[in-house]
Length: 373
Ligand code: ZN
Ligand code: ZN
Image (tube, rainbow, N blue to C red; front, side):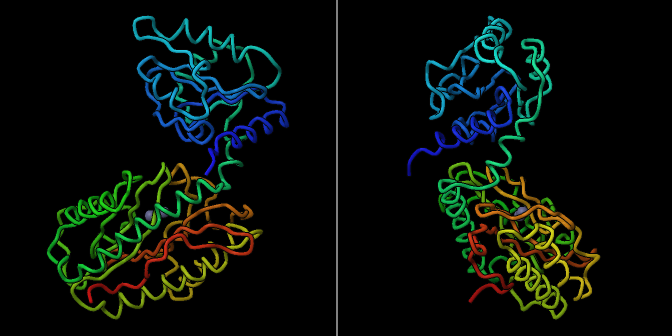
């Protein structure tokens, strides 16, 4: 696959020209990674990536991060200016701003996640109206290109494989603590080719399942407990995010089965509503109606889904009433859940990719609660 950054940069610069804006001013993070491949993290040391509308990207980097900047496929070596701790960032920022930001009309679109300390220094160094980089980067990042789809598919398949391994353990899981099972999940993801956790795994057994983002505890998993297992991994920087609710060591009770059936049906209905041109709110309504009809509407306490890309939660949000139109290339979760205080919770989550005529599920592992042989 050819390097995708050149075409992303072209589209970003075209958007800047169309809008009459001067440049993007990015922090190390998802926008800079998307456009240049830079994988560094933002810190207290001043580090900016600039995408001017009529020129190649340039970076101001602390000396110790210079190798990261030079490794980025979208940043040429001679476009990286560095500063050392003993000189401080101010002289370098003044020179960098004069070279890359001072000229031209229009706004500087600053990274939505640029720390305020860096933003104030930038404002002192260059006199220009400001806007948000998401105005240009958001519409680009929301439609995933081939390289992104490939990474998202591979990440989903790693997580799916680990769900299969957990299912195979069956009754052996009974007696394990939530915390131990979370560590096991982490190890299995690593062993299956995952490249780190995008978020801490949720392992929520029995009554703990009624908290959607429960942090694993020392509670031991009992036979027949529904266990909400929500976890993901990263591949090439892109996360997976899926949830299954499994029952180990016994048959699910009738009540658990009834709730699980409702959530499963809601998840099917949500996925079935995904197609280009549909509204995000339509997907939410399709899933929510099933749960309401089953009598659990008050127990479905969150939106139906969220976009996934370089960030685990990003546009588009699949929320009640959202008029956002779905477009081919969008990737988001469909994850209805029912949370019954003091009893248990059930959530089923898959990622879907909007295609030209419907959607592709990125998670394919079975959705039922059964485990073991
Ligand atoms: Zn999740
Ligand atoms: Zn999710």
